[in-house]
Length: 158
Image (tube, rainbow, N blue to C red; front, side, top):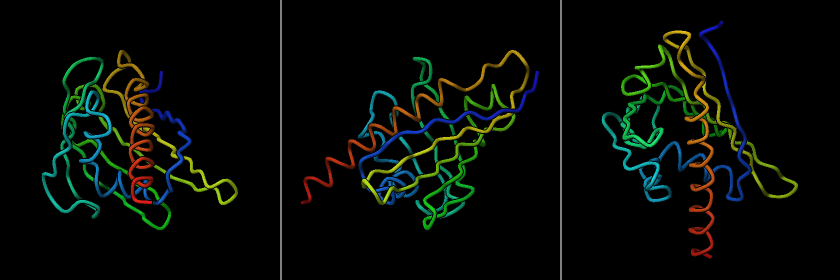
């Protein structure tokens, strides 16, 4: 059995793709407003929001338990609306040797909607560790809530 893997899921979003990507890359602290039951806080530990190399600590619920995950923004591409965050510390390191969260947002010119693709690349510490489908579902749910938050905010501005 391979210890390395990749899982992904798509979320259709109504908000503009660039705004969605900007929120995730530059303002992840707003996620606790969108989804307080899932994400309690996102704190900047080092660097500057939206700049490659920033380090953030995420306090969230994972399988109903309080969890922490510290990530470094390895790659942020605003032109292509993508980003890669690598876990460097926290609960996920108890299960995975390597764990990356990748976001790719694509916009449709035809209908104005966008697609947010979440991908998790990981290497399990051992064969007994499950695939991170629960973490992927957290990201899918968070993407839907972030989209609803952005859509509502944009409606209030118009």
